[in-house]
Length: 105
Image (tube, rainbow, N blue to C red; front, top):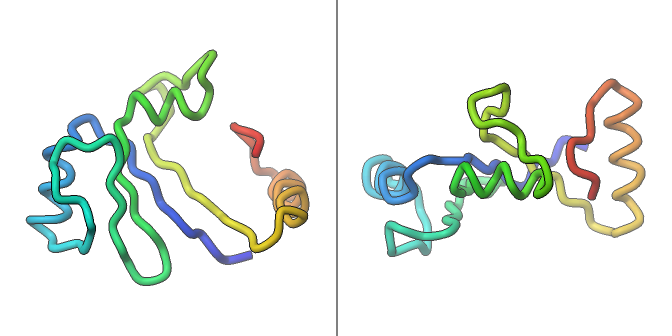
C-alpha cells in the first residue's frame, strides 16, 4: 500500500507559493503563470500540488468545509489504485487500522 501519488498543499497565496517552489527552490513544473487555480510539480515518485486553501477546504466537504486554522492543516494525500475494485479494499483497510475517512471516494 505504500504508494502516495500526490501531496496537495493548500496555500493562501498561489502566486507567492508558485514563485517560492518554482523559482526559488527550482521545482520542475509546466506552470508558467503565477496566479493559477492549481499547480503540479514533478518530484520523484509523487506529484506535489499547490491549491488555494479555501477551495481545498470546500473540496473536502462542500456543505460544511473544515475550519481553516481550526484543526485543518491544509494538506491532503492522494493514494491511487490501479483498478476501481481496489478502492473499497483500501478504504476498509484505513478504517480497520483507525483512520478516519473524511471524504468518501
